[in-house]
Image (cartoon, helix red, strand yellow):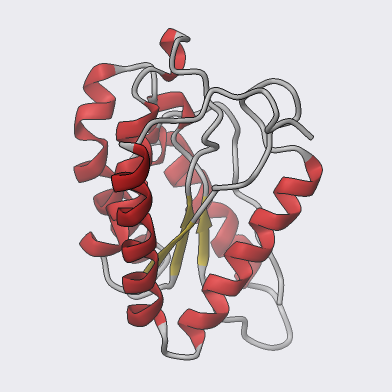
Length: 193
């Protein structure tokens, strides 16, 4: 298994939508990585973690739920694999909604959680129980490792043909959490590594 890093921190979804600079660069990097080898490589999936930069913009947050699945489907098609498995990750629940940059974090996270209902071959992993590194923005090392395990577990379940079951289970868990917490982000500082 090989990973082709295409991430770019601090970016809004618009840059990842079809025609955006990061969309174009991602497709270029993947195509470059897949050619020029003795044996053919196959894309096995896409791990997606994005959204913090859209949390402060009311217009972006209001359209994020419609735009995210479209952007990911366009990326799948541009990569030549319209059914490429996609695993998305929730934003950290410690984002400070009192900060204007993150006031719409619940709407963005809800869109991320609901994306598997709008697209086939897609799952979402939870960020519950994970901690930040002291800045209420980035996952600490231990939590980043755990998030990676969650991404891998979801991807493996999708490979085994259990993606529909996984998505349904995650939606039930998420809906239960939303009902319990009214989809508010905890503001406690104890979620720091």
